[in-house]
Image 1 (cartoon, rainbow, N blue to C red):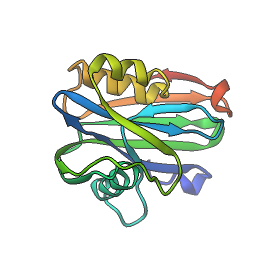
Image 2 (cartoon, rainbow, N blue to C red; image 1 turned 90 degrees about the vertical axis):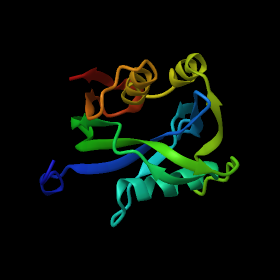
Image 3 (cartoon, helix red, strand yellow; image 1 turned 30 degrees about the vertical axis):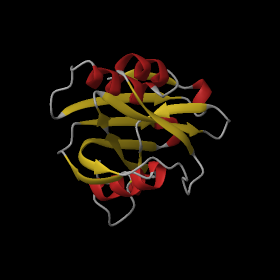
Image 4 (cartoon, helix red, strand yellow; image 1 turned 30 degrees about the horizontal axis):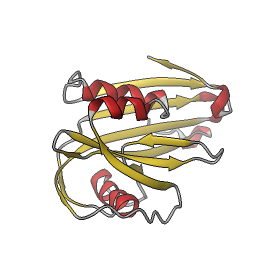
Length: 169
């Protein structure tokens, strides 16, 4: 959305990774401010001057130690508006085509504590801890229900995470 910042809104650009190994999906455990553990695919904020895939390669390396050499085009996108926070979150999700390395969890941000490759059932169970705007799209992708270019849009009202109401548009 052009001009959001001109109207007092903040926009966060985020990139997410789908990394598979033998039919298993890589999920990482993120320690959040309130102390809760949230399982999600790896990813993070796109810094100024970075493309989404450059940011994603950096985030995956920082969070997991894995080196991704190439990505597919965008698999799906997620948009979340937080009107009570004057914030919009825009997420592009890509699949790793070629990667190598061993997992090492030394996240410089101190958020990612561990990770694992999980089968679809375990992934679904772990993703229960994630926000609906992460859980639903990843679940749809795991179920084969995501066409290229699919866009998931959400509205999250309420100022505090535990008190938010989220609806899919």
